Each structure stands twice: as C-alpha cells, then as structure tokens.
Length: 460
Image (cartoon, rainbow, N blue to C red; front, side):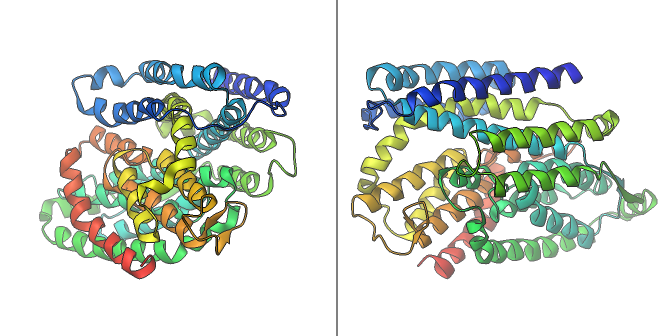
C-alpha cells in the first residue's frame, strides 16, 4: 500500500509539473486566441460520453471493468482533439487552462476519497424507518462537506450492515443514491464535481449556498417520502427477520476521527487558497498535504476494514482525462454559438442541463451549459442583469444550471459517479438492485414529479 500510494503521488506530482512547466512560457503567447474549432470535432466528446454510458451495459462490460482499458479509450478519443488544439488550430492557452482544471478536479476528489477512507463506522443498529431516515439525513447533510463520493463511501456499508436482516431493502439503497450520492452535494463546491468545476471557472466559493432552498425542498420531500415508504415495508417484514435484526444490535463506533481534521483542511484549502492569492497549484499541493497527513495519522488497518482500494478514483482519473480533452472543442463552440440552441429561460436551462446530466456525466454537462450561458450573455441573447460576480452569468440561470446538473444526476445509474459505486457495493453484499431501466422507473415515478414542482416553485 505504501509503494502504491507513493507511486500515485509521484504520478500526480509529475502531471502537475508537466502542466505547470510550459504554462509560464505559453501563457503570454500572442497566437493563443480562442477560435472555435469546426463543429465536427464535437464527435469525439459525444463518442466519449456514449462509450461511458453504453459499454458497461453491453457484452464488453467485463473488458470495461479494467481501468487501463478506460484510459486507452480516453487517450484514443482525445488524440485528435489534442492534435487539433496544438497543431491544426492552436488554442494552447485553452488546453492549459483545461489541464489545470483537470489536475485540480482529480486532486480534490482523490484527497476527499482517501481521507474519507480513513473514517470507519462500525456497529449494527436496528433497521427501523427512523434509523434509516437518520442515516440518509446525515449523509445528505455531510455530502456538501466531504463530497457525494466521500459521503456515499463512508455510509453505504453501515446502512447495508444495519439492514442486512431485512427482506425489503432495495428502496433504502435507491433513496440513498437519490439523497446522499446526489442531492446532498448541493451547497458547497466540495459537494459535487459540477459545482467544483464551476468554482474553478469563477463561481465564488460560498455562492452555492444559494441552492439551500431548492435542496431543502427536494431533500425534505424525499426524506418524508422515504420514511412513509420504509414504514410500509417495515410492517411487512417477517417476525423472524425483526427478531434477528434486534438480536444483532451493536452500538455505532467510529475509528479514524482524526480524519475530520484533515477533511476540514480540504475545506479550508478550497475556500481560502486561490490562484490570485498564492502561487499556481498551491491549493492542490495543500490538499495533497492533507491526504499525506491522513495516511501518517491513521492506522493502516482502518482503511483495510473499510475495504479501501484506489480503484474508484483511478477509474475517475482515467475517464475524465478523456472527457476534459474531448470537451474543449464542444465548450468553445457552445460559448460562441450556444444561443442557437433555444435554451433561454431558467426553466429550460434547468431541464436541459438536468436531462443531459441524467444520461451523461453531470460534471461536463454543467460546463456545457455554463459556457453556453456565458456566450449568450456576450452575444446579447440573455439579458446582462443580476450577473454572478466573475462569471458573467445571470443569477437565476446559474442557479438553474447548478440545480439541474446536481439533482438530475440521480435519475440514472450513470448520471453521477457514486451511483454506480453504491450499486456495485450493494450487489456485492447480496442486495438485488434493479436493472438500469428498473432504477429509472423509480426515478421517473419519484424524482421527475418532484423536479416539475421545483421548476414551478423556483424557475418560472
């Protein structure tokens, strides 16, 4: 484990140096003018996203499980966009900015993932509706602080352990995905990858607290609905299952509490260290420092008990290098011509960003509509009033993009990274999770009507 961690930290440091090294030489180059590429170059971005969405559902799913194969696909699909941006139609500054965002993105997710892996919740509570709602409520609250990935990985195993004797528990995992893996990450840039990318684009750190009303309404509605549904299923539990559940009660205990300090350090890094008040990559190096401190202060067996592996974060790194490179032409085109899409009201931005976030990954989807809105303001297609500082986007439009991207990532297994991770862990522990479309039946019946109400309440 020590050699593996050292290898990954060395690779990350090398990546940062490669990006940082030429930055100073290229930043002032007079030829670095952002000229939109030909529209056909978007095909690589579309192919990347469709590959992520479709291949896991085909006979190639076993091949796709290997992160090395994901990296190969990313590099193959990113090869021509990289060549185009460096040689055919140079936009070097755009590429460097994107690679900086990628390094920051992976460093944040990796640091949160590693530190949260050092927090272990042990014990087995009675699997009552009140207990389950408390777990989901806790996860919803902490997801904005430790990220949806961190909160999901911290709590999904205790939730499954608590409900191991129940016969009816699929709905617990589904609502866990709704709340902890998605909606809960709405209030801080740390919470969900789309909001962190927005922060890197210029959204003020504390601005996302403006989502509290939308998140509060959706989260409370889901928690109340869950409690009612879980109460219904709990009454149907066999008496033998309830007796077994009561016989196995064990108080919750927490190992690795020192990691709360390092998680607080990550929050401080993101909130206080910016490119304007420090040297380039100071924030990322500080976050890596918090992760190293976590390793030095947490016994190795704690992560072993948590079944911690580097696999999930390496998967994200392998896929997102391809996403970040292939999306550059799409973002440049949308910023220049996004007004032609006909998406010009808060409600339309909410549903457009949300629909794409349901079937593609919500992080690049957020950037697509973020850049579209920016371009429309510049081109006079959106009124330049009530702009969010340093973004050039109207307040309500940015609110709609943020809510759509974060909330509707819960509509499918592929809408947000933690969704599939939670599903896989549940299935490993014997929970018969619904198929891709089976899960969508839940989201269409529960989430979509709730999002319609959200539209009328906040975006009309």
